[in-house]
Length: 224
Image 1: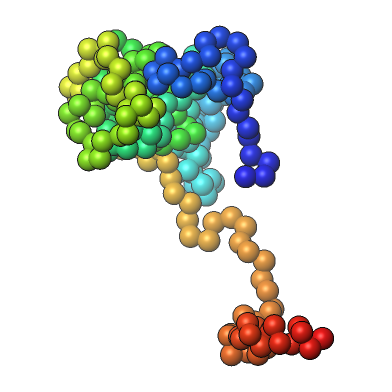
Image 2: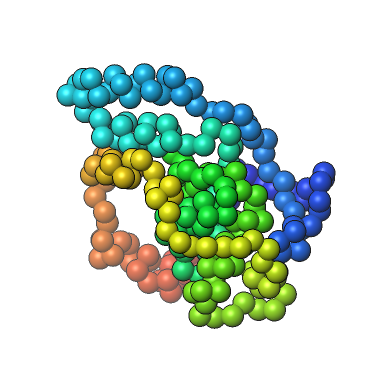
C-alpha cells in the first residue's frame, strides 16, 4: 500500500535464495547489537514486584519485561513459525515443539517480546527450514504445491539437519514454567476510540431518490 516498505533485489551477497532458488530481496537497515539493557530491565522488574499495588498495568509490564529478560541477547532477528507455515500452507508446530527441535539440534532458542508466535535462535536459516521440512513430512499438507513454485522447491530440497521433535524442558521458558502470563491482552475499549459523531447514519429510505435509483440519477443528470 501507499507508504509501505519496498524491497529490492539484493545488490550484494548471493542473488539467489539457497532454499527456494528465487531472487533474494534486501531490506533494512537493522540494528544487530543488543537491544536491551538487562541491568535496567532487572531493576524495573524488582521495582514492580516491590510495589505492585501502585501499578495498574502490573501484569502487562511484568509479562513484557519477563519475556525481554529471557530473550537471547545476541540474536537480532526473530523467526516467525506461523509465517513459515503460511508459506508452506501447513499446520504450524507449537512453539514448544519448534523450540525443542532447535534444542535437540544443538542450538539456543528463546521467545521474543515483539511476537508471541516467534522465537529467537542462533541456528542458521537452513536449520529452521529443515525443521519445517521434517514437520511437513510428519504432517503432510492437504493440497500439493504447483511444481517449480517456491514452496514446492523449498520442500523438495534435501534435508541436511537431523531433526527430533522430542519435547525438551529447556524449550520452555522459566516464565511459562512458573505460569507467568507473558502476553497480556488489552482490556475492552483499550486506547483511543473513534471520535464521537453527531451525524446520524442515514438509512436507504432517507436517501434522495436519485441515490436509491441509479436510473433516476442518470435522468436527473441529463435534465441538468
